[in-house]
Image 1 (tube, chains in turn orange, brown):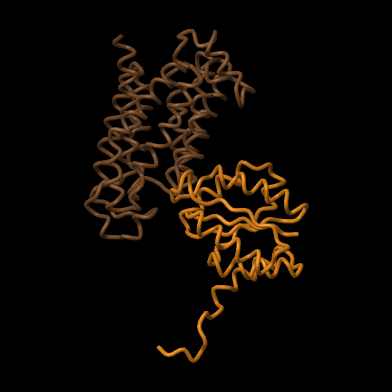
Image 2 (cartoon, each protein chain N blue to C red; image 1 turned 90 degrees about the vertical axis):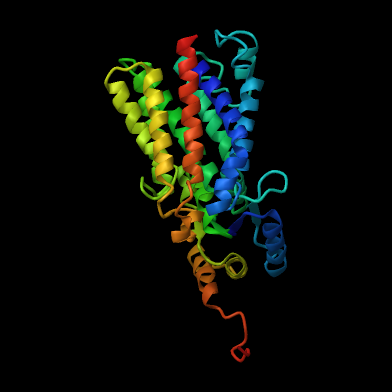
Length: 138
Length: 246
C-alpha cells in the first residue's frame, strides 16, 4: 500500500490534515514531518528523513508520496531524500500539488489501489478541481 | 585542527547569539523574520554538543573525558575528540547534522549541507597520500561548503543570498593560501571579502528564497543569509588569529 508523508511548517496543520485523511482513507498510512521542536514553525530535514524512513516501512515494497505545504520546505525534503540508500530514494515521489486537496485526492486514489503514477496524477489534478459551485455569485 | 574547529564553532555560536536580534531584523525586512532565532538555536545546540563531548577539556584531544565522549553515538570513524584533521571533519559533520535537525527551512538545509560537505571533504583529504597541509584542507573544505550551497540552493553569486558573501570569501581564501600567506591571514582576507560581499547585497534584487517574492522591495536591505555568513567566517578568522597570537 502506498504510504504518504506530509511536510509542513506547522504541526497543527499537518496533524489536522492527517486526521482528515484518516477519515477519507483510513487504510493509507500517513506520517508527518512538521514544525520544529517546541511549537516553532518550520521544516527540518532530519524530521523529514525520519518520516520518510517510517513511511518506507509502512509501504512495504510500495512507493511513498510526499506532499508539502510551501515551496520553502522543498530543500528539507531534497536533503532528506539524499540521505536514503539509492534503492529507497527511487521509491520516494514528491508532488507539488496543493497540500490539502492533493493529499485528499492522492489518499483516495491510493486506497482504491492506484499505482504511484495514478496517485501522483490524482494529486496533480486536484488544482484543477473547482472548490466552489459553478453558479457561485461573484 | 580539531581544536581550532571546536573553538570556532563556540565562537560562532556566541557571535550569532549576540547578533540574533540584528539578523532577525534583517530577515523581518525581506524574509519571514526568524533567521537570527533559528541560527542561534542551531549553533547553541552545536555548542552544547561540543561542551558535552568534552572536546576542549583535553588539549591532547584523545584521553579521558574526550575519549568517553567519542564513544557516544555515531562513534564509527573518527570521533569529535580526535585531534587533528580527523577530529575536525567529525566536528563539522556533527555541526551539519545538528543544524539540519534544529535550524528550520532553507537556512538549516543550506548551512547543514555546507557543514556536512566540508566535514566530508576533510575526511577525504585526511587519509590522502601525499597528506595535504592544513591550508590546502581549509581551502578545499571551504570550496566544498560553497559548492554544496550552490547546488542545493540552485543559486550563484549575484542573487542576493549567502553566496554573495561566501563566494568572494572562498576566492580570497584560495588566492591568499596560493600566495603562501599564513592561514590566519588568508582567513582574515576571506572574512573581509565576505563583509564586502554582504554589503554588496544591499542594492541587489533578490532572486531566490522568500525575499524573491518581494522583488524590487528587497532592494536596500542586506541579505540575512549573507550577514550570518559574515559572522561565521569572521569568527573563524578571529579564532585563527588568536591561536597564532597566543
